Length: 91
Image 1 (cartoon, helix red, strand yellow):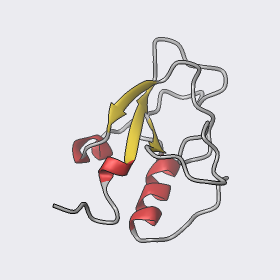
Image 2 (cartoon, rainbow, N blue to C red):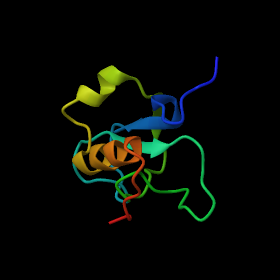
Image 3 (cartoon, helix red, strand yellow):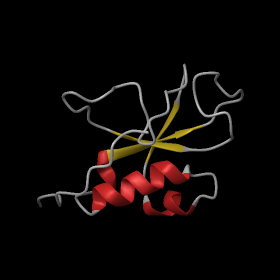
Image 4 (cartoon, rainbow, N blue to C red):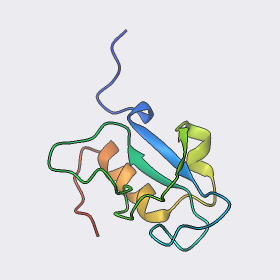
């Protein structure tokens, strides 16, 4: 069965580890990133444009995780825009 053009399977979730990484978000947030790298894109950035932590904890994304109160609002906005077929520039 073919997968639709847009799917949650195209994204992963990064959970904060025991310590907040200096290069990642300074708040306890979960972030989203594309599972598959795009040409011309940045491989070390989340959907909101933040840098990935040094040792990220990866999770497959499912609909229940989209209701997590720790989900980065900027990542959610970008995900929603991509769902509608729009492209938002990185902050």
